[in-house]
Image (cartoon, rainbow, N blue to C red; front, side, top):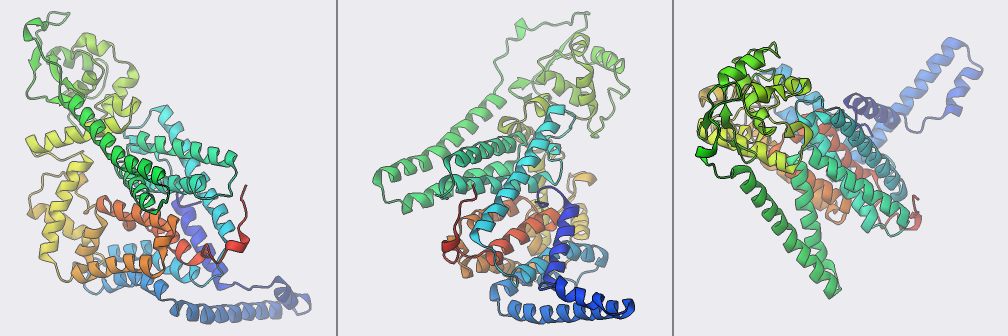
Amino acid sequence: MSIPTSRFTMSVFQFTLLGLWLWSGFSFEVAYRYFRKAKPLRAIWCFLGYMVTLTRSNLISKFTMFFQNKVAMVLVSLFLLHLLGLIHTSDYQYALKDIRTKLPLLLLPIVLSTMERISLNRMKILLVLYVLTVFTGTVFGFLEYLKQEFTDIRQISVFINPVRFSLNIVFAVFILIWFVFYDQIVKWQWRIAAAGIAAWMMGFLFLMESAIGMLSLFLITLGLLLIRMFLLTSFKVRIITAALVLILPMVGYFYLNKVIRELTTPPPIDYAALDTHSATGQPYIHDTVHFGIEDGKYVGLYLSLDELEKAWNERSDLAFNGKDYANQDLMYTLIRFMTSLDLRKDAEGLSKMTDKEIRMVENGIANINYVTSPSLRTRVSKILLGYTLYTSLNDPNGSSVMQRVEYLKASFYIIRQHFWTGVGTGDLPDIFRKTYEEIDSPLQLQWRWRSHNQYLSIFIAFGVFGFTWFLFVLFYIYIKAGMYRNFFYSVFFAIFLLSMLTEDTIESQDGITLFAFFTCFFLFAVKSFNEDEPERKSIS
């Protein structure tokens, strides 16, 4: 329950779990005997002896179990790979920080592979608690959205990183899908409730404009339908499923095509019918070239810059020709914002803006829809604007998609230079910093990040052999442990494989904990469905 809500309690409960693991079998009755008759100092000494003996016994027995579990050892090798990367690293300060972040890859496989497995019924209860926690996170996020005080829609993820939270949402949705369609012992009232919560969380995912979340949801749904199609025995149901597999991509394609066409095709302009002067008599500029198109509108129509500057400076302390709080040209932010409101860029148009909207412009919000109407359409609009600026002005700054193009360029450049051995565990930030200078990247300093691709990050850090081992580990544990037969882990595995294409998913605490916990949970902590069949009970 801490994974989607709190980095702090994530750590606290992992170490709590470690303590329970070290002292499993602790008996209050035995401990009480040391204090019942003995003198205080001797009682304490005997109690400590009991705890040391218990710890030693547990460590011996549990590590014996661990070394007999090939899957657990292979999984821990990912942590050992990062330790091996210390050999040729130069930035040990960052390397040790990275090692601390990766501790769940060591701790959770050892602990969960050597503890008693829980029943299927308990697994279901834990998954329900997890889903309810994710749902609670979306409720808090929606309340944050209603305030409309954010400058970036991703800020409505109030507890953890928005990308990692979106992965939690996608996984929670598919857990609910399992309860609705696969678990035959859940009562129909709970199925309806689960379907409603799943719909809510999918809506929140679109509200948060999570591209990787929406894409994962779409592709995995498509994959499940495809698999289901081959497993079904009913010809009619198979035909219906096949139709869905064909229709869903077509619907997605036609929707995106329609949105892109609407966003990039402004209505025809009759220049003779355009007003030439503002209400105060100032001449308008009608520029359909330099200011571009946004939301299907020419940003440069009805511009009276001198008049707009004077009106702006009367309502704001930020200079019209200066920067907004997001370090963007304020003039351009204002012009785009007024275009999204269908206002003319003059004094009269500015007078129609509320004080709240003035604050939005000051904070760097360039389109009212970014705050009031976040959606897939708005996300596509941002991508198109970023693409236009990148292709016409070689400016990727501020566009998460276009910045990733630069990250990929830098990543492949580094890989060519360090193909065999990589740069080591701790040198990634430094090598990226140097590379951006060497390739003369147009990225500003605040946007010069790492690859945003976990596969490339591993390749850069550990070279081709480390990258090959990383892939081997992922697919070995999936196939060797028979996880391809487990709905939950298969979905979770697919979510992570997709997320690692666009994010350094396991380079942060919330990402690595999400990956390590649920991987170990399904691999080691839960009895198989066949083992647990006699104990199956309804959680309702």
